[in-house]
Every structure is written in C-alpha cells, then in structure tokens.
Length: 244
Ligand code: 13P
Image (cartoon, rainbow, N blue to C red):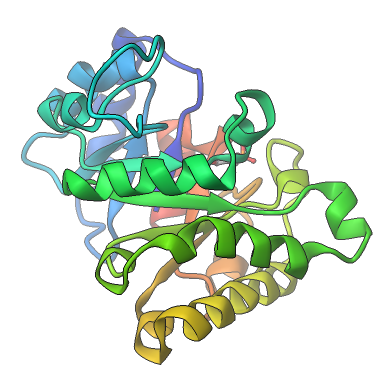
C-alpha cells in the first residue's frame, strides 16, 4: 500500500503525520507500506519510520548518476537519504513535465541499479478510454517502457495502473474496470517475460482510492495493492486503507 503525497506537506507536517500514523499501522504486517513525500521531507520521514516496517519512497529519480540536471534527484541521493522505493512515470510527470515512455525506462533502470524498488506508473487519459483505446495505450506504454528491462530487472519492479481520469477526480475506476486493465497489463507481462513473471508481478491500482472503496477494489484478485494520493495525506484515512 503506497501513498503518494505529491507536492504536499512540510517536514513539520510530515513528523506530525507519522506520530499519528505509526500506532495505527503497528500491527499491519499483511502488507508493505510505502510513503512517498516530497524530497525535502525525507529526513523527517525516514527518522519517523526507523524501526518500523514503513518504507519511504521518492516521487521521481534521475536517469543519470550525477551532472548538470537542474531540479533532478539522483538514485545515490535517494539511497543515502534512506529511501527504498521510487515512483517512476507518474501521469502528472508525463502530463506536465515531459516524461515519456523512453525516460520512464531510463529512470526505472537507474533505480534498479541502486537497489531501489521502482513503482512504474501506466494509465490512459479520458479521451483514450472514451475512444476505446485503453488497451492499445497500455500496450504502447508497456512496449516502449517496461519491456526494455531484462527479466531479472523486471522481477524487481512494481507496476501501478492509474487511469488519469480517476486521479484526484473522485471518480474511482469500478473494481471491474481496474481489474480488466490489470489483466491487460499482466497479459503483456506474460507475453514478454513469461507466465511466472506475470503471476509474481505486483500491480497496484491508483485513482481516488479511499477508505470506503478500498475493500471492493482489493477483493479483485488482479489488484495487488493501491497507490493513493489525496487519501494518503491524512493519517487516519491512509491507515484505514492499509487496514482495509
Ligand atoms: P488520488 O488518490 O488523489 O486520486 O491520486 C492518485 C495518484 O495519483 C497516486 O499516485
């Protein structure tokens, strides 16, 4: 269960969140919990989760090791900050910051080289869904991005299916719609990396996940977890998702 805080919270607000969140998930060992705060909150977040099973992730990672890349953050910087996961290719990065399938692949490889777990995001926009192009789009995102990994690398990633029309809109994909998309992604995985890889890969659903819809989403065998935006900002609401 992963929380993507996007561009919210200061270090002080981060510490206050974990103060409240930690006891609520103390016994939740049925799943991995990852919170991805803004870069400036890593120190506060990592210190707050030390000794717990909560992990801290980043919302991005540079493809280069270091260099003249203003505004980027390298894998080594993340690792040395105590970060273990990295979201790659979030639709907001694709939409507003020029992220492409090719850069998603490069960033994913950079994360893997340093032992970080990439959470690679895919998902269609409203016009693609309405045009009946969802599967086609997922195929292209897979073929031009994730399919460039080796089998060994692929075994270490998680995928997040986040339909853009469901993000921050309150319009959750129905469990059936989400499961259909997960099945389509898994079929791509099977074709490229084989049956075992398709069964093993974790595919998270993201898009308006809340305490009151998480149960029906997670009841779909195709859905292995969730990537939560808005509802991960509040300790009680994210704990209710983790403890669904
Ligand atoms: P919301 O849960 O706010 O719709 O955001 C989903 C998301 O983008 C998580 O990465």
